[in-house]
Image 1 (tube, rainbow, N blue to C red):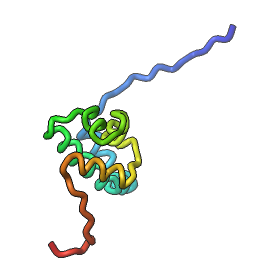
Image 2: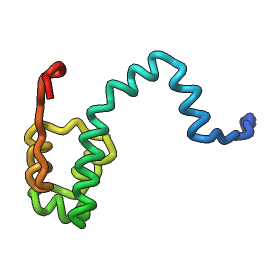
Image 3: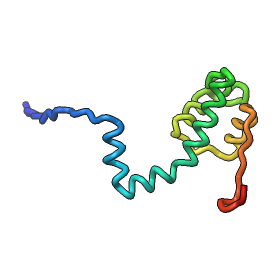
Image 4: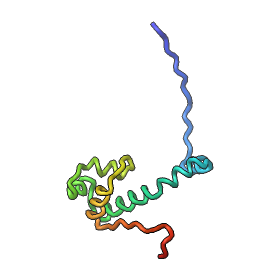
Length: 106
């Protein structure tokens, strides 16, 4: 019989604010975080619109002919949606997706 020994390490919890402070000091982390800003802005806007309309993921999915799991993956950031998918969502949520030049005058 083989005996297996395991080292047990005590788990320490760190507050989110403290973790953010540690991580954002790393240039590579901040760069990666900033690169996701647009993605999460789109997701959060659509999530807020869905909730304001009183739609569940399942009701929204049915409205646009998809499975609830597709909406869940999108809202959690675990998918790489096509423009057609995003357009279906924006139409169903009465939103408009607009692209403007970065240096456009507003």
